[in-house]
Length: 361
Image: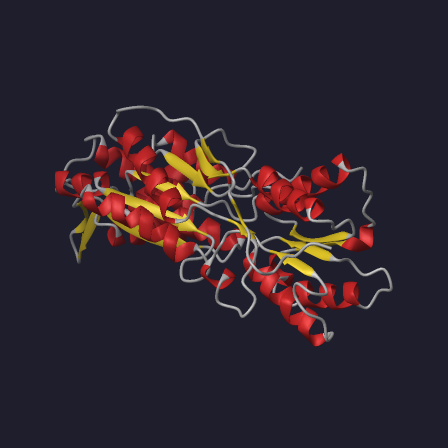
């Protein structure tokens, strides 16, 4: 396994001085070591020291006076602001179900007097790294985080360990990292996909295809639920009936895979999709092939997003708690921050929503 990613040297230096100030060993107005003294103390370059100073200055920890030196500007006011700020780090912010989740978070935290810092990763590990660096350096009371590419190796584990080291609590939503034991708020995705597939079996479908995301834990779990339902009915699905894609392929793979499925002689009579977005892409492919939903092929999504009812064919799907999940995660994090309780995880039971995209054989 690849060695765990290391925290940047300049961040380590900035963190050192930040801790010294927060714990009172460097007081407001005290003069810091010179750049040359820090170079010698930490065995780093002047460039690294300047990066560390820039981080500290941008976050209100130091002020630099021309010809005089660098001085501590950290006070109890800084500490008070940190104690009332929550960072929210999700894969996306402005589309799909994410505005609803963030709305639920904001509703609870704002009413309790907390400030929010919003970050998104676009489901990219490098962006997650950059966001975590900013969150750690900004100083926050807690973090609500949706793991990035949660089925892949956690190359940013060092940053989560740093949060733990600083006693900054975090709660994971929608997914979780297997390397971390922190609280999680999300859905039982195995059960959700199992319920969807079982429903299709109950209304007569046997040749059921599936399209699943393979770099997020939600996708792996939904595939497990789909296969579990088929296995119970002793139905063996062929590999060509299951499409798997990663984040970088999401814009084209689902539609291309569905086109291929429908051109086979033994084409499926139903398709289980990773989420509603993928179901809409599959719907477009079905139309391109001159077929109809649900008359020629049944289609199910997942999440009960706004797009589940935005198309002319309303999607059968599994309801995601959205706003309630955001509210739940916020309350749990506040309980930990304010010392009321140290929470374990909370898992929502899936709810099947039957609409016009499915019919029996």
